[in-house]
Image 1: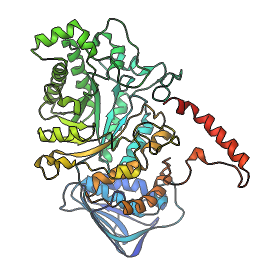
Image 2: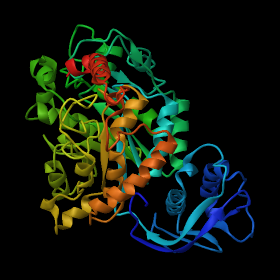
Image 3: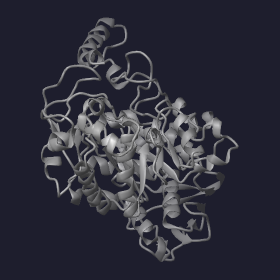
Image 4: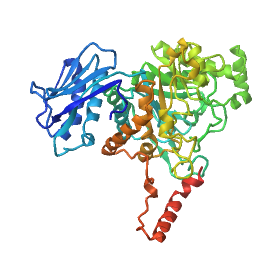
Amino acid sequence: MVIPKPVRLDSRPGRLVLDRHTTLTADPALAEVAAWLRGELSPVTGGELPPGPRPGGITLAVRELPPEAYRLSVEDGGALIEAADAAGAFYGAQTLRQLLPPEAYRKASAGRSLPLPHVRIEDRPRFAWRGCLLDVARNFLPKADLLRFIDLMAVHKLNVLHLHLTDDQGWRLEIRRYPRLTGVGAWRRESQVGWDGPGDGRPHGGYYSQEDVREIVAYAARRHITVVPEIDLPGHTQAAIAAHPELGNLDTPLDVATTWGVGPNVLNAEEHTVAFFQNVLDEVVELFPSPYISIGGDECRKDQWRASPAARRRIRELGLRDEADLQSWIIGRVASHLAAHGRRTVGWDEILEGRGAPEHAVITSWRDDHGTVVAAKSGHDVVPCPNTSVYLDYRQAPGDEEPVPFGTVLTVDDVYAFEPIPSALAGDRAARRVLGAQCCLWTELIDSTRQLDYMAFPRLAAFAETVWSTEDRDPAGFRRRLDAHLDRLTALGVEYRPETGPLPWQRRPGVAGRPEEDDAWQAKVSEWTRPLREGR
């Protein structure tokens, strides 16, 4: 009942019991994985899982295997996890934990021994990039909640957290050279209710200090997750312009945006603005050891440039054709700066337009499959994340039953059917350019950890299987395994969307045979959800 599905799993008769006497031994290269597993299991076994030769213990051993691959065998003599690297051993440890009863995911003793079925598993990931974008710019996610989300990614063997840190509605990263970016840009006076409703009148804000970021990055790294930061430009920059008006195209000051959608305010193309963001990225690369840094590049409206004499002059000076080329020039300057730091630029598929994407840029393709095909055939590595398949902020069912009925309906089955390699690349050598895929959680309409849980799960589990397991889908088998997996999520405290039965706010307290109580309850539900329904 493992998610994502292993390459090969052979069940055998018998079981191994873990209890307070169980030991845990590891080769030195895997000591950190052993420490993590000890920390997860000792509260529920009631023991310390010390190293030792006692039969029936857990052993982590280095063997010759592909990167991130592992073998797991459980028999009377003990449990053995074999891997060539710490990542593989970590994924083997995650699988071992899934084989235990759901109470193995709780924070206190189960009060009994934990049975581990005899099994032999051979497993490895299909793709190297198994990611999730999390937008903390629209609605800030406190550090403790972000660390919790990283743990949930690790449970599902995802290994890239694409952290969207800046946008029109907020700047969430401390930059010491420019303190106004968070002093001003991290705070807005209110937020829009729904996609196009009124303001809520409540100030919103927050940011991660540089000490916070180092903690987040180290916490993720211990779980073999790379944090890829995104500093969006030249569009989606109103929060930065509000803090530093000299970056914009207007003479009038701006506030941090309080509404959603694609705003008109973009960076100007002056040399001082390019230098400003090069200075910002100098601090970003010092904080994030990721080989990849995203600079966005999406949804950059060109109206202000068309109306700006300074922008038109810049186009002539640089020998460019138009505003699309001007965006390419800005992206190229920033990408060259990152390359000088030994980092690869990541950008949304819009950076393929104009003069084309910078050399060695990685494309995150969100507009159906078109960008994936163009990027791969143009020689760019690409990470598909099409909004038609893996935008987990989109609603999960038709009608008004969802708390946020926004976007295309994407059910668990829809997400599970996602194929990272488009059919247009099938059999083409360019398919090797597909590094993997990532799902996306944009947070305009996700303003709490509870709502994040509801939108992400269980769909994130379905996505994880598409990027870990083989391209051969097994919908019926996945559904059976998901039923068991939901018990693990419950033990972890994840408030996922239930797959069957009424949604939590639809459960009526009325007594059977007394419809007047049911009707009264439904009226209350309608009143509670009216602001959300009217805000769409």
